[in-house]
Length: 484
Ligand code: HEM
Image (tube, rainbow, N blue to C red):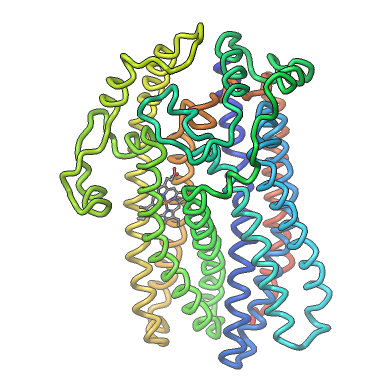
């Protein structure tokens, strides 16, 4: 069982990372095309309009592959983690449904844009359609993040988690049918098998008859502040990373002699640098939210085996470098003598302590990844400041092409690695749970043995689709002799 869970987690993670490449090209592409289209109107300069066209083409090609790989990833939620259906039909219902609506807006308008680009001269047409596509792509990304955020911070479950874990916060209003969830949890703990094997349709229906539906308000995921900060942090990360890949393409063409690309490239770098500053502010807020709602994750990130100060976080969050943050010693101590306020045959105290020891095993890796992430983000931020400074001198890079090219490559590499590390921190940091404080991965898995053939088919399919995407971008857009 442990093997299957570990392999499935690894497979899901690789699938999501691969899918994220096309998503970043789509979301960043439509956002940057919009920026260029607006600049073309403000500056009255057609080269920005032509560049928006090239970028939109890459974005559209990536959209096709992103839609397909996204289907593989979303199917994975049900095929590999079939217990997740419980969430899909409750807290995840509206975020997923509206995400699909956003996806339809995006898909429909992309077709409209492709056929209308040369037919409609009016720039207002281009700006409106690209804005709507950018809105659709950002919105669908935001809603997927909303569901992932709910898994990190199960908003709308009130004090359900706190009932077992005395150090846990209260997750907003209690829209959860505590009795039913408790019953499900007890059966899972006693049986030891995954949810879909223990609760067949019949048994589940009987439970619903006895206890009523699982939740009373399906919009809870939208009410979580943690989720919206996550959405902002993630969308900024996507636009910065994907945007830096477009900047890299422009920098390569610039260095090969397309001098006219210099100004649009500098404008793009300035835009990304401003987003980096904003990301610093949002990132700080992300940290504050983690301190509040995922105490064990924060202790892992800050390396707090023992409670103690974290001077930088203490100073920036509470204005006091000596502020003492809770570490695992505190969580373990307070859990030792604690008994949940319910009648049950389950030894919850052992379960809670066991969970804490499991979480503690992840501390060294989460702490290292987080420190690496923040250090790289700071270096990328400093390069961003150089881009801001040199924007004021439009001709600064003419005689320093190689330096600019190298800086763009370093910046792009850093802002690609930082989100990869960020995701690793986010997902490893909520272990041993998949739904923080409620379900373990072992409880939601489908228990299908993953052999080499299955892994080859799933990963092979994703890698093949990604390679085809890159080849199409190369043949259709990159090989054009001039971009503007
Ligand atoms: C120095 C500023 C930054 C701080 C303080 C910061 C803080 C954080 C924190 C605390 C998390 C964990 C969130 C969670 O688990 O709930 C996180 C995750 C993440 N970070 Fe950052 N971050 C910063 C900069 C950046 C930058 C520059 C990028 C990308 C360009 C980035 C991309 C991500 C991503 C993709 C995640 C995972 C998804 C998410 O939680 O939104 N971060 N960051």
